[in-house]
Image 1: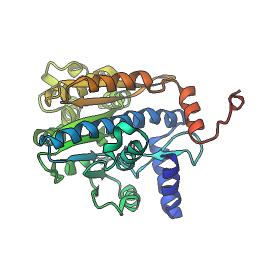
Image 2: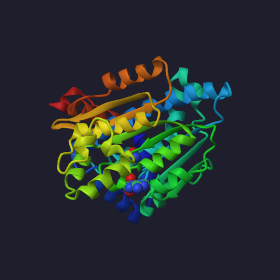
Image 3: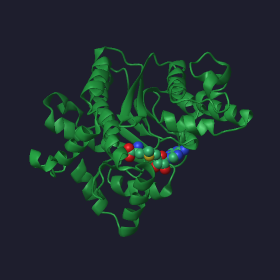
Image 4: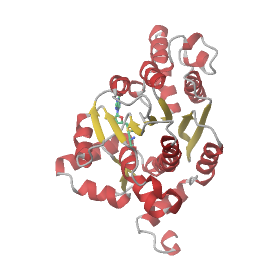
Length: 329
Ligand SMILES: C[S@@+](CC[C@H](N)C(=O)[O-])C[C@H]1O[C@@H](n2cnc3c(N)ncnc32)[C@H](O)[C@@H]1O
């Protein structure tokens, strides 16, 4: 995925390479955060093969018509790891496109998923990012890229109502970028979708706490968590709807309550830690049942590298820059 990312980056003209750097500077501001984005992409990359395999089984049984991937905040298609300019990998959207073939060719029990998703829809607000993303996917007729606000596009995306959807939502921690309750609820009312969402709870708590007018605060909170949230019994509702009181835990609980309200019984969070605390959570909501989801959560929670040095070591090894233990000391 690193080699493929470099190949794609090298195919861009200078001005677009610079635009990718501008995106990296904004969304991967510190060196530590680069390494931590491995965890997000790891959780995503491990979910894709399982979703496809179980999905294919259900398509064969006639339960669903097809398997569809939607990325609501897809960025330009590349993600940053490590401190070096060339330390890049495929971002969420391109992972969803290319990863199934890689897994199928290397893991015998997943060889049936090589074809990947039947359709992929990538939504991204910035036209600079979508111009780049379109270049990367223009030879794939089953991929569609939308330059739009996900809140406008998601409810309108032409997806078969009998499809099984994997919805990846990665808006970072700005209040304005979040998916609104209206967009999410109208989509999941019409489609069967598993949702993987990054929740930058501390960033969002700071955003809510900086709003000093109660009417504006309630309006912003309910835009994301739905009408009536402030007077609901959802954990976190009281704190989020009081001036200057929002906390990280209240934000996380509010998202989980929202997803349960939308009909998801299985809602789990995977904290992504860095040395100063929790950077963000990956929240998974699924209507699927069975041991495989528990197995996945267990795998992600226990096998995902947990400390900064291990992540860094893995990355350097993957990029051939760690040849022996001596390099470490
Ligand atoms: C954290 S980045 C996404 C990274 C990407 N998922 C990856 O793994 O490479 C968030 C992206 O969301 C985009 N964005 C912000 N608000 C948006 C909105 N309302 N609708 C769609 N995209 C939005 C930003 O331009 C940015 O590219």
